[in-house]
Image (cartoon, rainbow, N blue to C red; front, side, top):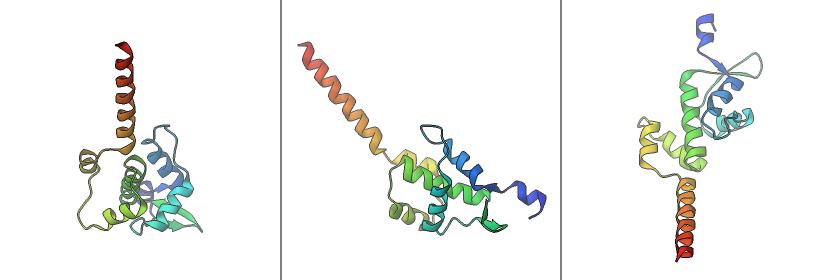
Length: 124
């Protein structure tokens, strides 16, 4: 890789930090998770140089962001994400977030509503 090309590539640790920005705890996801996703999703193809050192370009980072969003934020299964990634249509994260409801958000809202109803009944 030339110096210019090298700047556009990120190591697995850098990618973990990039993906970690989307987690609730603000911690990077473990690098072994990224390696697992590589095995599961054929679309993720890092350059492997100097033995086992992985380098990810922007295209691979975008795919990893989608995988992370769909698995972690949307609660999809690996097979569900595979179906989306195998679809030939381009996938935009905004489209997904606008058309889905996170199960955890829905559950939390139902718990809050239930709690409010109990509080209201207690006021009588």
